Image 1: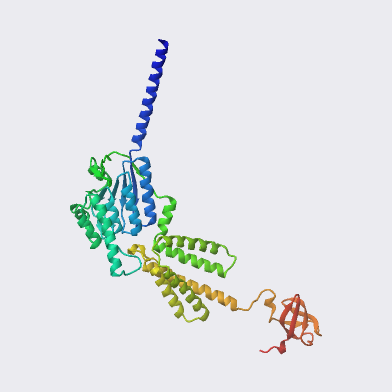
Image 2 (image 1 turned 45 degrees about the vertical axis):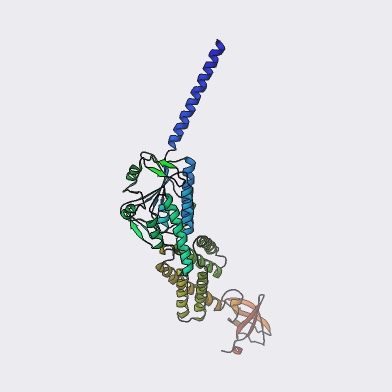
Length: 439
């Protein structure tokens, strides 16, 4: 009887512990039932791809209800766009793309990303579309243009058809570069919702069933769920800042100028360190951007013209040519698919003109310093005039720069006669009579 009672008590304790653990597990599960939110207001490039990928991975680990991506972009690189679409499609957590605030756009690459989402939403006053592919590197031949267009259109059809949206209209944004307001996008079944803010968006999506890319259905329950902002890391912020072609070019120009200053003043150290860091940062950014490395030849050629201007004093003709070459090199340096991913003309001029003037000035100073006669040390005594304090037969004493020097003359010189220093041997001067020196 006693053993039976003890067994019953133990069973009760185990059951109570199991209930407590289950309750804790349920509480933990409800705490993770949140919406992960990120904000993308930039061009689409490898850092954007990395940021969105980390967010989707984090949401999958935490088993969040959804990932909300607030999007505003003029477009970007097609390779990065394709990578982002792959991550969205493979995400176990539903992805909501919301083009906001009013006045924003999801153009070009942004349209592809918008259509790949489980839920595509736009705020009033936004637009999307204009997704025709543009090849970096200039004008395409007809065959390559057709291949790229067909590839982009096929990607759009495969994504849009799985999301049960209007395939024909979506494809027209690729082939004909059509753009749509939020009302046009909704009426043409390119998006699912128009919402003025986040609260209204979640309210409209409450209880909505979305069909995942794999075919499974999922009912959204987002109202009242906590929103967890997911920020970029410091590394991603720095790299995203440098991915601006204007910033990359300015880093390169400042680095080159600092290295030039170090070469002309060896031992200064600081310019060399700054120049090396800036050049490496610019090189890293340019490696991720669609860079025309042939443009670097123009940039380095401009340095050669600046040097020639300083050496031969062509009254600015060669210097102006160097500034023009540097400006052209800057404009051709990054050949992005959209204007926002190229060096701006005003940035190129604002950097090239001061850079050219400063470089020519510094080269002038350096060249003049090398041409000038040395006025310090042993070499500074050569050519100076002194007075013989004793007869030089040929040895004797010479008064020079307030000091008495041992001297040896090339011919006999009387005391009080003026002499000119020819060279210095240790602490002994070799002199000639001043009268023997041609004027």
